[in-house]
Length: 376
Image 1: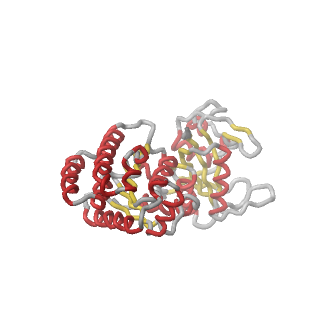
Image 2 (image 1 turned 90 degrees about the vertical axis):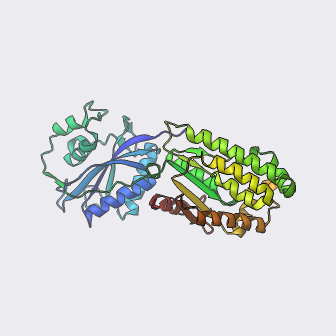
Image 3 (image 1 turned 180 degrees about the vertical axis):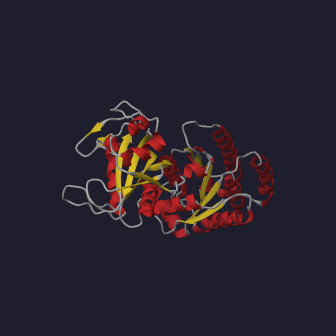
């Protein structure tokens, strides 16, 4: 089980568009480190230890799964990504961006690469002032005093001025949505994506229990005979699972994400059932559908048919290997009609045919960006 930790990170810059530098760093920290919970004001101070342009400094409170050793490496990567070139000579110098870990929970860390709490933070008003703004009552684990007291007792007499410019706090996926449903054709990657998001954002994941359905292997051998019992068993199981899992609030999870939605039952039933069977099925479905919680966001992953067939072959489920392209096309058409006609849901369609969000982090981040920026 991964543990979320609280860290306070100091940000400083004295080159270029300084406010923009701070915002860019905050945005990258939100993407790469964890959820940004609080952002202090910007404080302007003279350069420390050398003559140069004034610095803009701030501090942020972040919740992260990263251990401190990985956190410092990630911050160094962000500095480099934003254009900082570290000088090999000792001494202070201009900085496009400077990121320091001030506190990491209440831990005291002494390693070759990292010392926490920051060894000079109590001597520097530019670090303490923004930290005290958002963590006044947090205790310094070595000084055994809260940060507000540490600021008042700081002997640094340099001038410090608060800048009237607000930095924007990035909104996390877990803050935007209470329930996300991810859908797609067979082999589209919905289970994989739902699991990845649940791991990264501490979500309760609801995965379809298709492997437990005894009719599924029989259906792929004789669709006409087993279509109705298969679809009825799926409907009953999906209804029960979603009803139970969505009704149970988990205090230790930020939101719920599922790799299916109840409407999947109707889409597949339209393809597999005869007309008279479908009419009976639809009556039962309509009764159940009224009782199911609607997702805040419905994500449909589109994969072209050739890619779906390759994915199905790769994952190696024996009973799926005879699925034909025409059957997948019918399923997709059913989803397409559903998306066109259901205005009561906020639906985001993402074409993942050319993406590999498992092997390529940038592809995964592209999907997350679309989810975070979708207008509901």
